[in-house]
Image 1 (cartoon, rainbow, N blue to C red):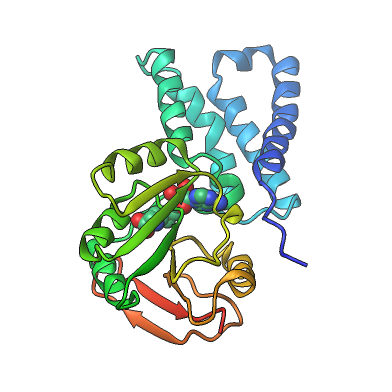
Image 2 (cartoon, rainbow, N blue to C red):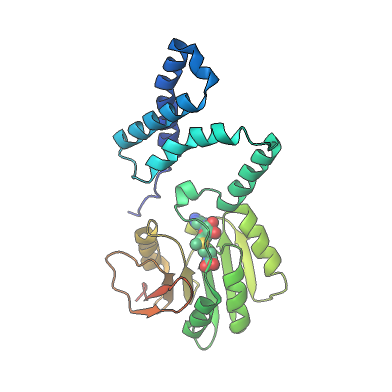
Length: 252
Ligand SMILES: C[S@@+](CC[C@H](N)C(=O)[O-])C[C@H]1O[C@@H](n2cnc3c(N)ncnc32)[C@H](O)[C@@H]1O
């Protein structure tokens, strides 16, 4: 049986915000003068939402988010910024980060040094290579120039990075950028698969790779090891992030 994707934390977080608002609303009804100083009920709402979040056993990093969300919104509303700008900012963030709440994999980028190292790991005779979650395509663009003998497929589900990746690689004949969910991609045809994700999906990725990848095919994970699976090799890089590559042959 294959592992299920993690559930989204958005609904519990929303529930904490709404439940946290109830005592603050009650206080507003009982003490109407509070409406004159909206920061006070907003702070109370934040504190109550944080308590609800603890009761939900949400990770501790939700506490500052709940504490700060409404108070910051109240303060931000005082700034001379037109409402359309807030909406525009929200839409840009949505198009860049998309369903990070579900995938638990935000956008951050592999350095050129990583591409140079991975280029040396690809099979000498060429082959098909996949980047699972290719972001804005910079990593694949670097890699494809270093290894013109290979063909590259990048899969990305966030609309704005996907568009940028398409544009960036438009003149590279050995790169295809596909819009979609890489969990639906069959890893069977690939001689090498690259993933720079997060700790959350690694066990699921390990299972998928073991099921689908061919004998001897290489899986390179940047920064995040597959739990309970010994890597064939590990490479420490000298890029600014001090990335570490974990190399597996899951189909072996
Ligand atoms: C950490 S970034 C890595 C970007 C690029 N591979 C690099 O190394 O520079 C991970 C990317 O994976 C994308 N992503 C996460 N889950 C995905 C999924 N299920 N299908 C497609 N893309 C996904 C995210 O939107 C993000 O752009």
